[in-house]
View 1 (cartoon, rainbow, N blue to C red):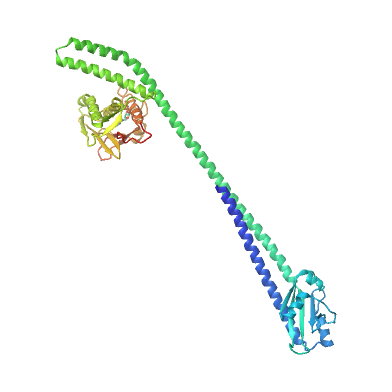
View 2 (cartoon, rainbow, N blue to C red):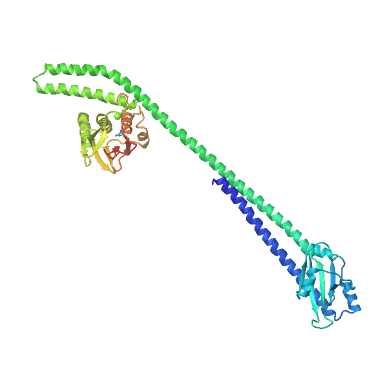
Length: 438
Ligand SMILES: Nc1ncnc2c1ncn2[C@@H]1O[C@H](COP(=O)(O)OP(=O)(O)O)[C@@H](O)[C@H]1O
Ligand SMILES: [Mg+2]
């Protein structure tokens, strides 16, 4: 059941409980009052009968004076049925029954009271027996309308109605308040859900926007780079033919051709990535990726006077990735780390694994990163480097590649007390990808 239905059900049952309790209380009081009244009538009849030793004319006259026509009636029963003190015979079934059964009182319904000439209201008869067993014995009956009882009943009914009305008003007021508050809560929840949906779609839009920027860039680069790359490869082949026999020069020409080819592959791979095409993924050892990345950066580190160490406890683990692109991620992180360090600085490239995930970490002892910069570092074109030194694209591209591999990339300050930054890439170990990956 929904909550408004609960509240309404609760309100109705509260009103029901109050009504039943008030009605029960009213019934109980009414019965108690009638009992008291009957007791009083019995006492009155008893004391009158004590004062009346026999039913002679004087006694009958005295009894007649006690009567209050239309309100209080005195009856006697001396073996000939019920009669007024004047001798006029009357009949009343409930009184006769009570007299026969020696009961101290009888209750008369409205018609029964009316039949005795009393107002048509509940009446009570108190019955006293005088000189039982004696031939002159008689029963003395005092019948009176339960007038005050009637007043009390009216007052009690008024109280009952007032109690019911006020409890109903209270329950309705609180119930309405609860409903109103619940509606306000629902409205708030709906507003929050809408705001959340807007935020999610904003984020998607921003990501699409970023991808579009990178896509345009990659397309431009692919186009611009393909011609010079073609020239480089062609010239390297020419060179290689010319220097045949000179092993060192031949090797250098081959390296030039290989690396030019590599650039082409990376650009094409990234282009495919931003177009949403899945490139060729393979199972590779993390050690191979680490070694590749290290080799590619060695020259830059040497030049900057920064040492590059490996910490590869988990490098035997395989990962499932596009090797060229993934190596490029590590290269980007290593180059940033190198840029952040002074001469004689030191950078460690580590691999470790936990719970089916492989972590690649690049730790430097450079100038460090602020929380604000690390939050913005993946934005395209965000750079803190001097003009001409940074493009602000390295981490943007790296984070696209990592998320393409269902991994995470995070930059944070070092936590071991040393100045510097840790960049951490995490992806699933090959064969342990969850179902939605790949
Ligand atoms: N290891 C690091 N230490 C300190 N800051 C870093 C590190 N790596 C990245 N950053 C910050 O992130 C920014 C963006 O990096 P990136 O996207 O690679 O662009 P670029 O290197 O061209 O500036 C850098 O300009 C720098 O402020
Ligand atoms: Mg960079």
